[in-house]
Image (cartoon, rainbow, N blue to C red; front, side, top):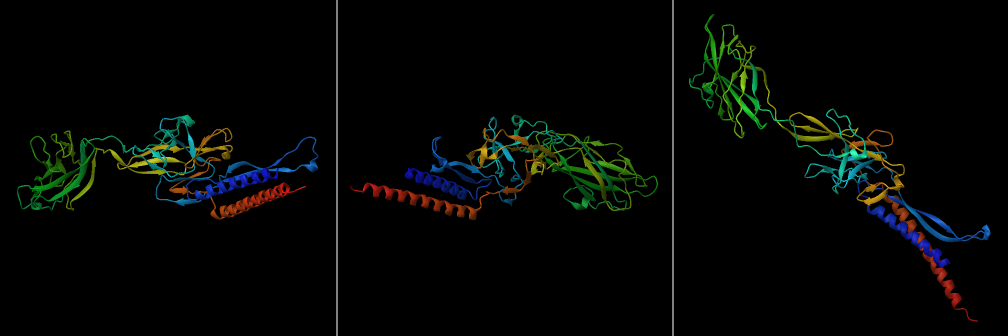
Length: 422
C-alpha cells in the first residue's frame, strides 16, 4: 500500500510543478491569471474500523484554482489599450455574427482591416449600442454589438453662398498696370483666400482680388473697385462679366451691388459635377480711411469628415472625432462579472467562457459596483510574482523528492522481505 501512497504524492507534486511552470511561462502574458494547485488527503476507512487505527492512503489534487488578483498596470500610447481595475471582464465574440460570447482581461485592442476593434486573436470587442446623444439603448448580452470605427462623418455639401464683410482703404491708389493679371501684383490692390467645398465635399481655395478703378473726388462722386474671383485656376464669371463691381459713395458706404452676385456654373479641378455659388458683400462692407481688412467671412459648404482619433472615457464611452469637427459616440464598453470567477473555463489566449460553476455573466459598465474602473491607454500585465513562484517551485521539488525517497524506502523494505530465507 505504501507504494501507492508515495505514488499519489509524486503525482500530486508533479501536477503542482506543472502548474507553477505554466504560471512562470506566462509571466509576460497580458491579462494572464495564475493558478494554485490545491490538495486533499485520502483516508481509507470503514464503519467497523476504530478511528484510532485509520491510516492515510495518500493525496489527490482537488483542483487547479485560478487566482484573479489584479495584475500590474502599465501605461501605453494607444487609446484602445484598456485595463480594468477591479473584478470585471471584457466581453468579446470570436465570430462577428456569432452568438458565443467569451471574456478576457487582456485589453490590448487594435483595429482590423474592416475597422472593427479586435484583440490579437481577432475576437471582436463588444459594446452597448448608443443613440446620438450617447445614451445606451440596449443592455442585453444578445443586444451588444462589435465596436466598429466609422471612417467618415457627415454629408458633403457644395458651397452655394459666400458672405464677406471687408473694408477697402479709401486711400488706396489705382494700380499702375491697367489690365488685371492675377500673376502681376501691380495690377491689383489686395487679395484674400477663402476655403469653399465642391460637390464631392473636397476643399477648394477661392482667391478674391480687389482692384481699385476710380477714386471719389468729393460729394456725389462714386469710388469703384473691381473684384475678381478664382477657384484654383478656374476664373469665375457672372452673366458674361469676369468681375464684380463694387461702388461706394463719398462717405465710403457700399451702394452696389445690393444683393448677392451669382456666378455662372463652374467645375473646380478634381470635381466631377458643376456647381453654382453666389457671393455677397453685405451692407457692412465699407470704404474707410483704414487698412484693408476682412471683418468676417462665411460659406455654407461642408466637407465629409475623416476620422482623426478615438477616445475611451472612464465610463467606457467610445467616441470618435473627425476632421470636420464632428464627434460621434460609438458605444459603451461592456463589462461582465461572475459569482465565482474561479469556475470559468480557460480557453487560452487569456480568455475564458462561462460554466455552471462560474454562473451566468452579469453585465454592467465601468464604475458600477463590482465591475471595476476602466482605464484607457493602460495594459494589465500578468499577476504572476516570479519570486513567489520560484519559492513554490522549490517547495514542490522538495515534496517530489521526499515522496520519491518514501517510494524508494518502501521498495527496499519489500526487497528485504523477498530475500528472507527460512
